[in-house]
Image (cartoon, rainbow, N blue to C red; front, top):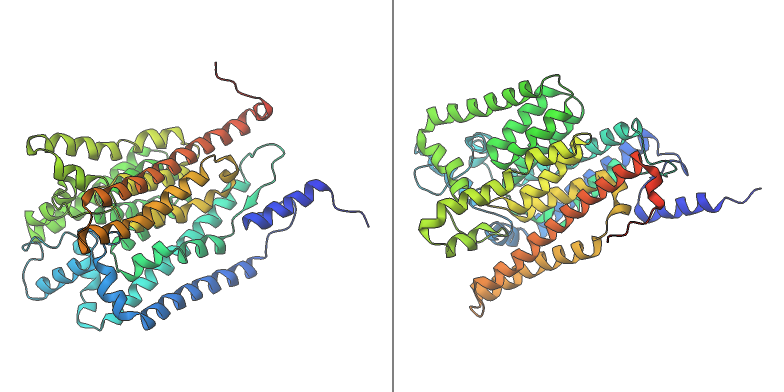
Length: 439
């Protein structure tokens, strides 16, 4: 027998290290095997959450929903419960100044209000499974699409299997904590994944509906309409944007007619103006506590436009990879929205394995990972020192959020640079061995 060549051996070693499949070195697993692995991952993810709820139910229900890193004024399940209570007594949920979420959530949880808490826990477990399944489908669709595209000459491609993508999402501690805290951000995340998947499949109407629902639940997904318009292969981008705009306006107009202007003030206006300065893992709260009132309106415009202004430039620059542009915009939302939480970062991290082939082009993985780990790890510690022990102050917690946000920005910069470098290798392969010297 002939010994395997060094090239094939190195490809197999790299595939085992990265958890991917070398297309040239070993055949991909059969579809039935991959489906069975995906079903196993989803089942184990459900079982993990059920075990935590059974073993630590009191801790989960009493402690986690109050964590500012997991729940915000616009995603808190406690505030949703207050809105359901007011609605059950024929009082507008937007009268009390507590409820700031979509009426769609009131409709979704109206029947669960009268049932034991275990039923709402089951809904959140089901949403996690749905999002993980959507990520797996999205990864599979991207693999099929990439197989038809021109790659880097001489490159050995690796594929992150859908079951691995689902597992990396389901077993992410930030995802588990967000689900157990019952943050309503998971519903917006499900709509975002649906929009990206349907857009990649060319299903224009479904993609527009999901994007509109995500925008209705949380304003910032409006940015996704730019890459989704490019993704759907529609002849007229303007027609796609028009459908999206009409659907969003219909939703808001309908609920203004039902609940009055108070609905719009308590939801859209509340998020844009950052009316509640409760601490979170974002940049807005501390800055607007310190700013003078006469400058508040100016800096609200600056901060909000900083996030929203990325939509068109990012979508245009990566117009040949609109799915990648959508993933970058999800990361920008996570870093720059007014009321972020750990769940936003978890969704962004869950989307990254879909572009596993960019890993070898990244340069700051170690720095980014350390920044995110320190940001996530220090936030509860500094919160404890500030609020519970009184031996710290707001600067402690805000310093942790700055590290956390800077880690996300580092990841975004690294990913964008990696994609640009890969595009250069595809279109100008002779530059792969060329040394660039800046004078």
